Amino acid sequence: MSRRPAAGRVTSAKIVIAGGFGVGKTTLVGSVSEITPLTTEAIMTSAGVDDNRQVPGKTTTTVAMDFGRISIDRDLILYLFGTPGQTRFWFMWDELVRGAIGAVVMVDTRRLADCFAAIDFFEHRRLPYLVAINCFDGMQYHNAQDVRDALAISSDVPVVSCDARNRESTKNVLISLVEYVLTMRRSRAVAPA
Image 1 (tube, rainbow, N blue to C red):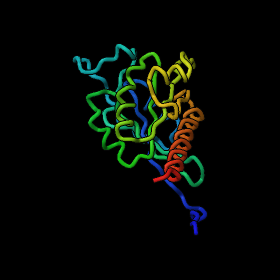
Image 2 (image 1 turned 90 degrees about the vertical axis):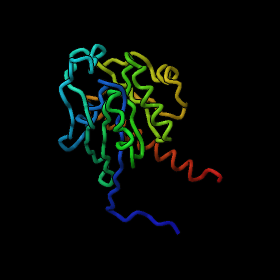
Image 3 (image 1 turned 180 degrees about the vertical axis):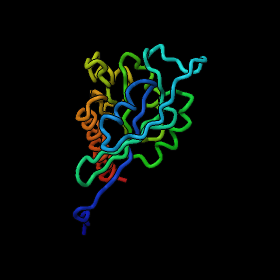
Image 4 (image 1 turned 30 degrees about the horizontal axis):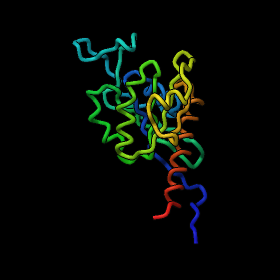
């Protein structure tokens, strides 16, 4: 006999938003969160520690995490944890991914190499992830297949486009990730032992 969830039962899930420095993680969490997001932004240092040459005009950086929440449906709440992008703060990633069902790896195709560390991190931990191409200035410079090939990721890993500033766009990314995680879990459940 199978048991169905009780009517009105709310399920919550933890999602990690990762990627390189200045790729749009804080922006994504802020654009979609239905609560005022918690951010740990600090003024960047100029003493040779913080390098913003690749992202001119960026004056702050995430030093711990970003946190937000979104209700996808009346019975599904996602808790979003944005990682810091600078390598000197990566020691926090292990704690941030604990208990997560999946991750979004944000990509700026102008600086594609910046996302390799995040992809390696999630693949090593076998945490499902998708790649979200952030369309800066409303432009997508490369198609999803070209990005997939450049990143050398499996054909089953979703690659989607988004505008991290747009709530509906980022919501669709999160829904895509949840659907991907559910598909993976179902396929594992029916796979022969």
